[in-house]
Amino acid sequence: MYTLYINMNNAYKLYQVYCIEEGIFVKTHSFTDPTECPNDHPDKTIDTNQTTIIHYRPIISNTSQTLSPKKETMSSQNYQDLQCDFYFNKLIMDRITNVKVIGYINNKATSYDVRTFDVTHNTEIISDTLTNASKEVNDLGYIETSPTEDALIEFHVKVTGSGGKATIENIMVYYK
Ligand SMILES: [Zn+2]
Image (cartoon, rainbow, N blue to C red; front, side, top):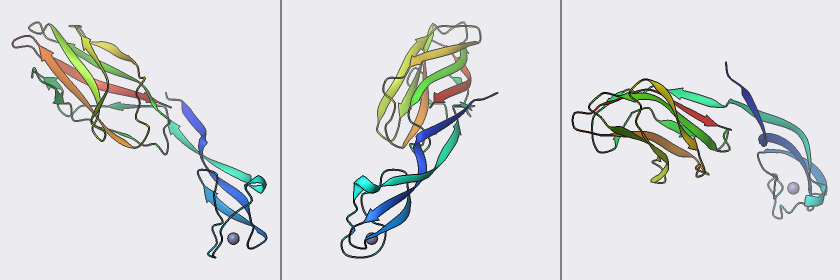
C-alpha cells in the first residue's frame, strides 16, 4: 500500500495575466507566478495585481520508493556504492524526509555504516552506524539536510571488523 501526496505548491497552473502594453488578459501555464506576458512584443510588463489562477494541475506522486541494491553484500572498510541510485526530482518532491535500511551484519563484523550521499552536490545527507546481526529495518533518522534542487543520490556502506560483511536487502526513501 502507498499514499498519494498531492503537492499544490508545485502544481502546474493555468494563469491569467494582464498585459499592460497589449491592454488585454492573456492565459499562460506555469509552475510559479508569471513575471511577464508570454506574447512576443517589446514591453512584456504585466500588472501583477490582476494575475489570477484559473486552475491547478497538481502533480501527484508516491511518498516513498523502495530500492534494491545490485550489490547487496558489502565487505569494504571504506564506503562503497550499493548501486541503487535515487533521483531527487524537485519538480515532484519537496524534500527527502527519511531513509530506512533493511540490512544486517555477519558475526565477524562489529558494525556497519550506511550513508545517504548527494553525488550532484558532493555532500552527505545522513549517515548512521548500525550493529544489528539479524535482519531489521534501521531508521537513519529524520533528514535535516535534504537537497533543495535536482540531485543524484547514492547509498554507501562500509563495514568495521576483519572479515566482516554487511548485507543490505532494501533501501526505502521517504519524501514529500
Ligand atoms: Zn502582452
